[in-house]
Image 1 (tube, rainbow, N blue to C red):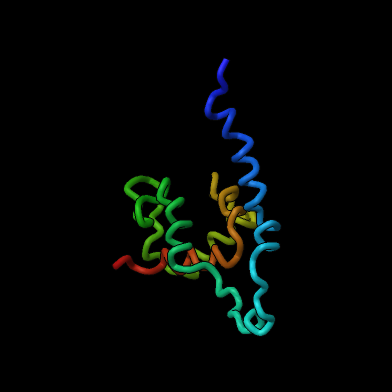
Image 2: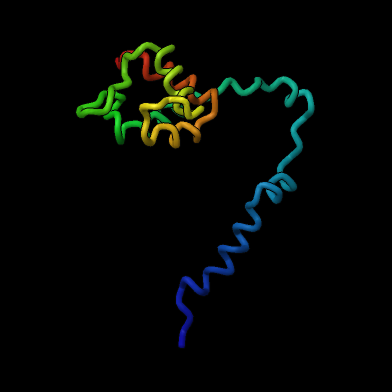
Length: 125
């Protein structure tokens, strides 16, 4: 019985995956000069593109671009401090009027929550 293409490719895929692990890539990558590493800017937090991708998950309930078409509140244009306080309360589990938001917000770090509040508070252009 001939082997299926999947069965014959699997060892090759496993080998390729093993060769592309971060540890393997670090061994083959040229070392960066220490001066270049020291001069590299510190992580400035999520980029606008990152936030728009993260905020895209909010569209399931809060509508495209944060504008709800149903009974769930819209987020677009709401005061940034209010949004931040609400999201922090959801994450801390202190918002008593929430359903799934307490679970969802636990997946975001503080920088992402701050960036989401800022992103939604701005009126879309």
